[in-house]
Structures are given as structure tokens and as C-alpha cells.
Image (cartoon, rainbow, N blue to C red; front, side, top):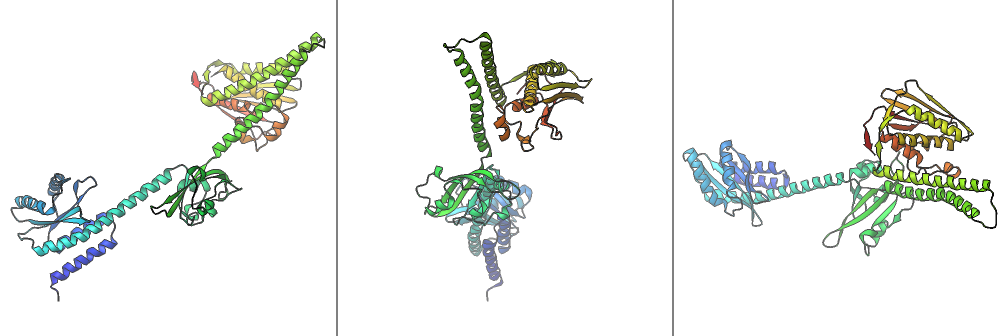
Length: 520
């Protein structure tokens, strides 16, 4: 039978072998290694020093060493940073240091932890009695240290991989676009939070499912389908070809959303397909911008066509030399030309204002404004211009003077009144106003058809005109957008009163006192 101490040594070696395959937490592993080493050599204290990425030495774990001595040893190890000096040459110096402190009652042994001819650390064990470490002690510690070095390397690699995975997960979840990582068989391996929000489904319902079941289309998308790219082994495909655009179906209750998907295959050095990265971008804004652009071109083409045709027609008529025009006919024709030119000027002004409001280029010049007087003047002016409408101003007795840009308020009220005239054939157009705490509230009411509830969320958008209205009335879709911009610039609010059902009612509030000047 083996002697007891040999049995114990074998058990220690078996334990470190188990630790090599079982324990991947570096701190826990180092603690077990040091504890076994101290017990195996009959020691009373010890420490493990490791080499950092920059070549510096530091004490990773210790047992039985007083704090003051530990600090001293840490400083001593710094002097060896970057040195290739072996543990055997360091131990005598440590022994001399400890002997001076303990009056010769402490001896130590140390051995390097080496993996593939590279030293990653050292194990030091100390005894608090005078006894030399035998050759057998060194042999046992060397075998132990070699296995321990492998375990430490594996734990370090595991820690590195874990941290890399955490960094990758944090990176994926910080990206605004949706990201899917696919397996070579096109099943979903991983999705980020942005894609979960985009498709309105938790990760549990997405992973391990075929890509075709996760990304579904409301209609046939444009571009290269993923299955086609895989079948062709990604040959003759550039980055710009690996692209797909369409309306992606989402989980209830959300409607389909326009997205753009870019694919990026990941290959091994041997050319084997490892993963496919799919980046999903919400292109709602781009789609809206395209629709806005198309709508703008359509509206402006239509709105500019009529006044230009009238101006050209009347000008050509007046230039005819074969007809004698009387004074009344000439005056009427010139009046039409002037009115249509004013119409064109108003459209250009609205476009310029909309552009300036969008880019923040308009400055409000604020003074004290008698809003009640301005409203009364406009009702008298419009009352003389329209024979089919009656204009009524109903303002409270305590209606106050406010601080605002009078020119812009005139533009605001004029646009709202023109809008009321345009969308009501006849009837009363009423302007009522009152003071509400530190604000004034003004509402313009007509007796027309009113707003379609489906249009209400969009009536203040640039160039927005409902299909029915666009066919029957002129307009650029900028009037209410400009009104909203002016009100917001003054720090107020504007809205459609949906509780009013006898026509249309638009209300806005303005603060009574504001800053002297504000840039949009």
C-alpha cells in the first residue's frame, strides 16, 4: 500500500484535475488551488501571483498573510514586472524577507505556473517552522502547478469569452436598428431588444424559429430574398445586392411597418458559412418623406397650373389685335390677372414660410398686441369680402392685451378664417375668445361639413389634404401647418375640437405674457 502522505498527494492531484474540468470561475479556482497547495505541502500560508496582460505581476489570491506583509509583497512584485526571472530565484529573497520579519521561523517554496512554455503565474507556499522543502516537495508542486496553470488558463479564457459576449450583447442592444443573428440553416439564433420592439414580440417567440416565420411580409418585398442568396452560395453578390425592402408584418395589435433589411454572411477561414447577420431598419420616415415629396409635387403642380393658365389666357386675350376691348372688359381681365398673381404670391409666401419654419429661420418680433381689436378688424374685413357668410366676434369683457408678434397673429387668424370660408358654403363663422388663467383661448367655428375623424390627427401636417377635399377645393396643405407653427412659436397650443359636430371648430391658446423675442 502507498504511504498515507502519498495517498493524500494523489488525492490532491485528482482534486486539481477535477477543478480543471469543473470550475471556470477564476477567483474560486485560484482559491481552491492555493488551499490544496498549502495543505499538500504542510504549509501555513501562501499566495498566487499572476502575470497581467501588460506583463505586470500582482497577487491574485492569498491565505494566511497579514495585510501589512501583503502590501509589502505587492510592492515587491511590481519590481519584477516584465522580468523573465524564474520563481526559484525569487523565493530566496522572499525567504530572507520573511526570515528577517519572523527571526528565521519561516521558510518558503515557489514554482512557476507554465502553459505551452509561457509562464502565467507562480505559486508560493510558506511554513512557520524551520524545515527545508525536499526534492519531493518541489516535484509534487511542479506537477500540481502545471495542472493548475491549465485550469487557470481555461478559466481566463472562459472569463474573456463571457466578457466578450456581454460586450456583444450590450452592443447589439444599444443599436437602434433591429438585429437578427441566424444559423446557417436560417433559424434565428439571437435578436436584440430593438427588433423585439419593432416586431412587437418577446425573444422567446422568435429564437429557434425559421427566419421566414419571423420576418413575414404584407406583400411581395423588393430585392434579394435570403433563401435565394443561400441557394446561390452568396456568389456574385456584393453588399448592395444583399438588400430587401417591404412592409413587415408585426404581432397584434400593430400594423405592418416598412423596413429595409441588409444581410451580411459570416464565413470561417475555410469558407464555411457560420452565421448570417440581418439588420432591420424602420424606414417609416423615409417612406413618409417620399410620400410627402410626391404629394408636394402633385399639389403644387395642380395649384400652380390654374392661376398660370388664367394669367396666360387673359394676357393673350388682351394682346389680340383683331378685337377692340372696352374699358370694363380690360379692367375685369386685369383684375383677374392681379388676383391670380396674388394667389401665386400667397402660395410662394406660404412655401417660404414653411421652409423657414422647418429650418428655424424666422424671428418673432413681439410687442403688446390688442388681440381683440385685431379680431374685430378681420371680421369686418372678411364680412365685406364674402356675401354668403356672416362673421361674428364674441370676446369676453376681460379679454387681455398680450405680448406677441402682431404680423404673425394676423397671418394665423387670416389662415384660419380663409380655411373656414373655403370649407363652408355659407352660414356663420364665429370667433370667440376668453381668458383662461395666464392664457387666452380663441376658437374659430364654421357651419360646414367639418373634419373627417380620420383626418384629424393629420390636419396640421405639411401638405396634408384628404382625398375628398383635394378633389373639390384649392389649397397647398400648408395653411394649418403654418398656423400650428406660429402658435407653438409663441408657446401656445392648437387643436381641432372634436366635440363640435355642427361644422369645424379649431381652437388655440396663447400665453398672455411671453419673452420679448423667440426664434422658431
